[in-house]
Length: 547
Image 1 (cartoon, rainbow, N blue to C red):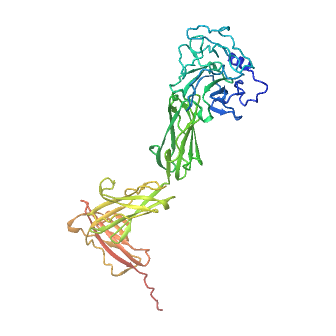
Image 2 (image 1 turned 135 degrees about the vertical axis):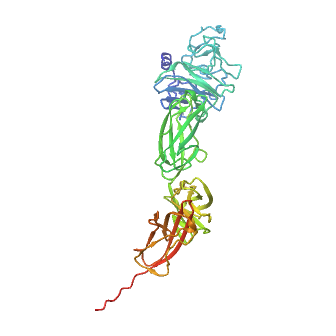
Image 3 (image 1 turned 180 degrees about the vertical axis):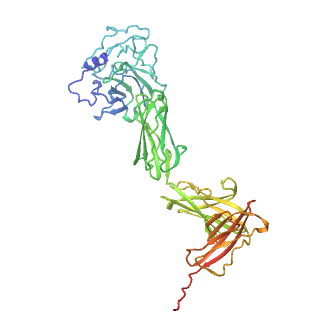
């Protein structure tokens, strides 16, 4: 740190130079300051280009870059890449610009890796000649910044015979583009990526500078390794990039990082829910997760979204080793469909009656009709599957059929005419649009198919009014009746065991009209028999009393 600050204090700039926007760099040739400033913060890294219109300091292809650490921790290195050959050093660099000034602190280097002295009158480590009037560096000595902390044995990449311009005290090549306390490693064969190292580490509040090849723009200079962010939604028992849940279900997003620098990743990933595919309208902020290497903390669970389609996005701010990145948005990203809850109820009809539990004679055609309810039902699509079960637990299927749903209206089941027995309907709605699936409850609909029999119902020819009458059911073909069920117009009104081999029918309180009474009796073997009569109720005439 002492070395860097001493160099900064010794920078020379002519009084005629324009004020530099970024004074973290010295005046070098045509540039009074940094063309680019890299700022390391506790939340990531930014690259800012000078807005005074600075270009390469040599007028051709050498770019002056400053770096400042405003974070709370020292910076030992930082990866920098470009689409250009920014590490294709060609032998001039900071200490040998075409014109003055050049930065103070440039010293005479070794001529070769054998640590031989250069041919000339000056000694190793002495400061290079600085003459404001000179237009070219007329000294023949190799001139650059000596980096005392650079480990021995490092190699660098150069594209021409002019590189390197000299050697450090430990025998490592010096390109001439290193600034004070800076050295380069990990340069790839194309010269497009490498790592900038600092010795000593760049302390909080400190800054230094270096140079890169090529004429660059802000968009062609990238700090950090390329990073990929993948995400997965989970909720309602599902997981994936596209899931559908019922309104009220908690949904979380989980991200993971990958890339060359992912193992060193730090910082935060923020999660946002959008209501449009362009990800411009925020529906909910889903918090952030801490980054520790490739592992990332999950979002805050979100369960308050109204029915609709939503698009989740995760954004990583980046850090000194990894570029900022966001997951894809829209249909190619994460899509969450929130459906309104629905309720499916049913009503069956057959044999002239309609009801949740109805008796019909063998051979009667019966259909089931589903009704779907919910906040978004007007737009409901999909199908309803009608299943008729043989058992009260709805395990053994007798038959099933499928009907479509359009505009919230479901088609009926296919007609069924099962054998004598007791059956149970279940209607299952598939869900569609913004409507969640639902099913009717097993046991909510019971169908009794019976053999026709004369069980002793009285004649229905006369008018009954405010009456209850007894029935003494006969035992068909000697079968012993163990229980009965009694229906009026398809509604179950009475059931149980016979009392002294009798039961009764009550029409008391019913308004004037015709009523279909069905008596179904059951034997110990499970067989059932049905007797049906239609009874008419009437209002008795008032009799005149004569005195």
